Image 1 (tube, rainbow, N blue to C red):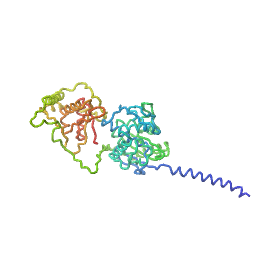
Image 2 (spheres, rainbow, N blue to C red):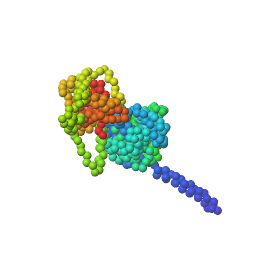
Image 3 (cartoon, one colour):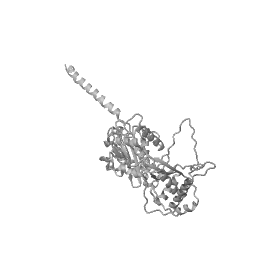
Length: 465
């Protein structure tokens, strides 16, 4: 009798145990894989690694690349912080975390950048990508080109925000590398990642990483990320004295456990990092132009004749044209010889300049030397034939091609020492005509900008690619 009475109870226990196993086992199987990396940010030396090269879901760590490209586009003059962005229906429909953008809404780029960096807003990240590249698919291709140029060898991006998508993968090592580039390539924007709150145009938003920023001494960024597939991810940087450490964690179980693990790894990094180490900043990205199969591309290393049209044989060029050319040269020489005014009206639209390019240097007597050296100037556009000349400088954006060409001529005459052999190039942008000198080495471009800025001439460097 007793056995018969206990049979239902035993059966109930077995059913409950089976149900519990069905729940617990899948949950444990769904736990995201763990990976971690710690480096000395000054040198890039690896101080600790666990599964650092395993390809995993990066989640919103992806937005570090979206922001890196946004900063790069601003530096190159492709776009500005005050560019007004029209929000697409796709961007507005992105799931949280989001700023709450509406389809058709107009908002300045600066607010989208703040929302993506601080709140990790998916709608803002998508709007940034679509604005820069025209579509999120085109932006993803640019993200992958940039990743390759930065040495992120095991990363593939499919979108601008990091929402889970098949094939959208990265590694702890690659994301740490990206975080280091953000820190050193764009230091003027790095403070965004340490803001506890920020004005995102529509409203004030709070930092998703504020708990670690408040709890860990010296922490000043960089980016959090979470999806079910990724777990709780974080790339964090902290500075104490002369030491700076970057730690990355993939696959945290919760915000609290992830932050605790990151704090532990940062402590480990500070223990292992030398108290003094040389600062070796990461190299600037080197972009390789895509090669088209079946086509031969000839590289012209020098322009062998003037770009101005020559008169037909037996015919003289119209007198007004010749006089206009001579007048342009005379005017440019006169402006080059004249002392720089105390204040100069800015061009129609001037691209954003990096503070690192605003170092003032003494111009000496270069202005007078330039005027003496060109008693009979010859206006010829040339490209240098020496190697490593992949840099350039921009001296403003102007409302007409004529105005841009005029300022290029004036600038070439006043700064012959560093701009000799460069290519004068006018680029038609949406907001006007960019006046650029191309075909310079990085050192020449930097020196030219510093000398021009000493004369109150607006200037910023243009990197390769």
